[in-house]
Image (cartoon, rainbow, N blue to C red; front, side, top):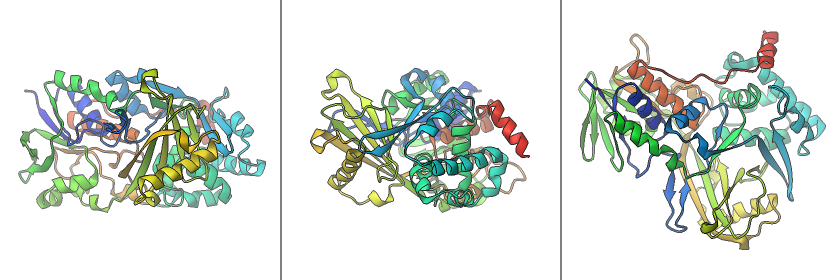
Length: 469
């Protein structure tokens, strides 16, 4: 008999869980409130421009093995452009390039880093000192920094304030959506270790050439082939609980009966789906009210002429953190669309659209003097107030596991599985963490293949860590 799993939430975690469940012979019913799949990593039809725009610029990196595996299963890996270089603005049009060189990891960025003019020789030595400490500690050494902020680690490595502002913070903000002073140290350390040191391909950045929602279209075919379905515009109201097991999901259009349930929604949404009896029965749900969130602001800017010459550009020390350039087709009516990203955008909440565009334009003009306000054809800010869970120190202690285990203090309802980047998947709030959680939840339910392995550390990386033991 084919078993049905009700999956609540059509974001990356829910899609990953549904694909793996379908491959294991289960019948997934994917329930999503919105009109498109993707959750917070999707696109929308913008009535002003007539274009399909992403709610924010999302990138993948070479170290993101699980989201890349999901994209491969969906057949969309060829929709990505890959960039081995990250560009850092110095103001006035000056740009530094941090690029993957010919040396093996962890030395692959060394040559371009040495050429960067943004930092003095003394500042580069300080950065290298911190990277050496990260390299030597490896995953096991990160554990001792658990529950502390990343700024504490940077102080231990004697990092100057200017280096923190212009180097460490831009990377931490983009990866963890919090500043170094607020971010859980182990999350930031993981980003620099596994994203910049461990493997040459790890830090290569991929950006989609198509709107994000297009990446998930093949999921419908995979789910339908397994006898399942996707229910868009369907709001889950409650998880049906009989005192022992989940029997289905109560939706606004009826009940989805299922032998198992995977929750792939954020913790605040899951809280509203759970009865008091369910929460009392499952200890994994006890801490979900304790999560806080961090916003991200994305600003789309269509320009009359091509003003940005690089695919990406970091703006160190500015209120706008990153710029991405999207080249447009001839029939679009304009040559280029810029997408500005502001992470941890708490200070931008409450601004009018005009104030937001003025701030972003000032930062773009600082980085690209050729840009002028009159170049703007149209603009569209998109604010995700609860874009990610806040990776604050100690947050890992409340992140629940995918499954309930007998005898485990965090055990509970056996056929309820939890997914979402906020669950205990070993990653900060990223698409990679979401994909990992979906795979883990599906594996816990089906007994099938689980999380895809990380990129193996390079030989020199393993050697350096062995010497430090």
